[in-house]
Image 1: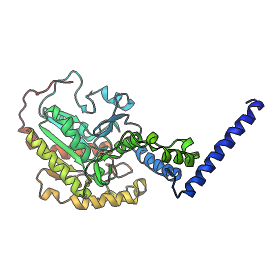
Image 2: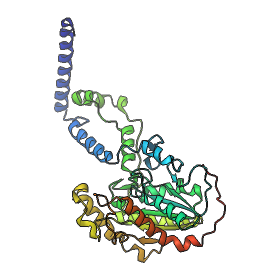
Image 3: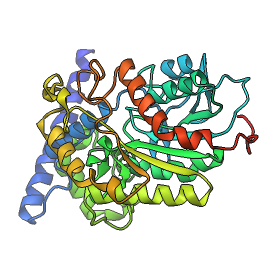
Length: 366
């Protein structure tokens, strides 16, 4: 930078500084407050980003209804496509040239059933069990990490019914503790809300934060220039507890499935922090005490549902006879754990599967 430009730069900086000071004094004299508290806003943004970062970088596609998903270019997805078919957010455990046999079994869930995220899943193992037992059928895995029954319900209505499934499975529980949804609007995923917020109320840039008083004076004196063009309506606030929300979603998925000719099963998924001997080996620190307490609270609400809802199955004890079934976080499964859960699900469905009609698919392969 040439020295001859220095006086000009200093003059600009002094002018901006005086303007900011004048704006600050004006706000004080008129008892007005700055429009934006950058320190608080920055802290909120950091918390949101930290929360969203836990989802990982695997999900690269925005979804207008359920928040996010896989975009098609992820390396992990490419590995899946080497062996199976992929159809806009769903893994079909058939090669591209294989015929889809009935019964068609649709699986919905979060990361503990996700067919892409970890390179293995229990729905994939369930597909293998059908082959081993000389049974026809096609497993379609629509599970995505971070999804709760709120997203499952939406995905069933929008996508799942397009496959005309004979069976619909929800493998859920853990993600319904409220972390992945807005407290009063649980069907709005946290990532979804974050995207909406950026459209309606963008994050302040560095200039706005440095000259927040000047920005506030201008925006307050000329509000028409700063009027938001987009507002966000999240609908009616829910008054249900997380357990009641889970129950509602499961009941609706059952009613929808039955109305479309499919049998529905909801498996309350196991984890190491509820009535499990694996709790001693699981690391509470990995997730935090608040996480574990919220899980326990939710499960206390929903664990008796199988006694009043015949389509809900308590699977919380399915891993208690085996070792080496959980990863360190006590939530996600090892490949052995996937096989044990798949066998549990298979045994539950087996009578109905053997009586299912093996008719030609009502849809064409993608």
